[in-house]
Image 1 (cartoon, rainbow, N blue to C red):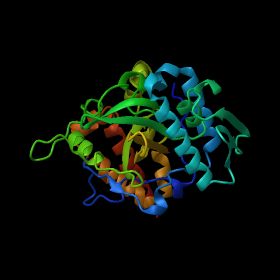
Image 2 (image 1 turned 120 degrees about the vertical axis):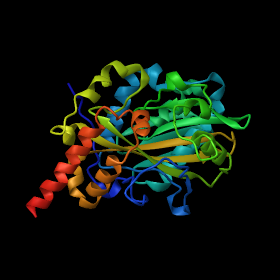
Image 3 (image 1 turned 180 degrees about the vertical axis):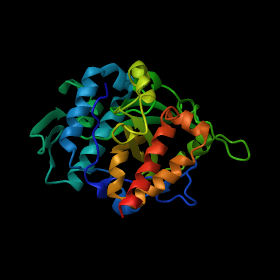
Image 4 (image 1 turned 30 degrees about the horizontal axis):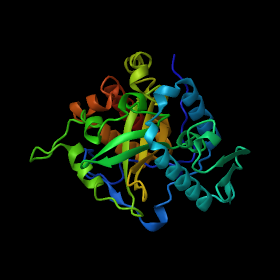
Length: 329
């Protein structure tokens, strides 16, 4: 009934989302922050790397049109993306990735998987996949390129394997505001949160990326894209206070926003992590603050995030877990 989900096994590498919130409550905000120089390289090899890559490639192959989309005119940007990603990977993990360049002839080697990609840089006919799709399959992140045009950003290339109510097939060509139109939050002056974030993204400059952390709860699924709602929709109604610990996962996205220097596009990078609620016992401080935050989620936020059908059961599970731990002490 429920498909198995990957979970983080090294919690030191798991980005807990509630550490910066006061009063044990969570609310949406424009929480993008600048990255220090030593954090600009977002590459991360986790203990689950091989499982992540295997699963990502399976999803991309099963639904190629749903999970990867691009416009024909994006090839120059795609090659810029290839150059960026390879450079970051080789710089951070030279023991795992290497690149040999002889004029336009590039040889990229993934030493973890024992795979080599040989291609002529700038010539998509030298690859069996589009360059963006090819290099993205070597890393567990999801990637989106949005072009800066008319004071907004438009999605023109996307590779997504663990979507949260997002689909490259559905969203290609949409503006940033159109993609985030369902966000139901405005400030006191009536300005939509998505519009505030868009204006902030306009200030990003090459070499000075921004980051933020987003989170959600998932019920028995890796991802929830529009095309598979008939599959994952019913799962949300099968969660109980007894099975929530195994079935409900805290889904965290660490996001990066990078201005591409040549194309002026903004690259959105999503590093998605999963942790079943039952594993919160490994970090009791996380368990308590997660409970308080989830117990205080407004109804409209729960509906927007898609977790309203199983949020009460998850909160009850966490409450019972905390009480059982106190009794055991």
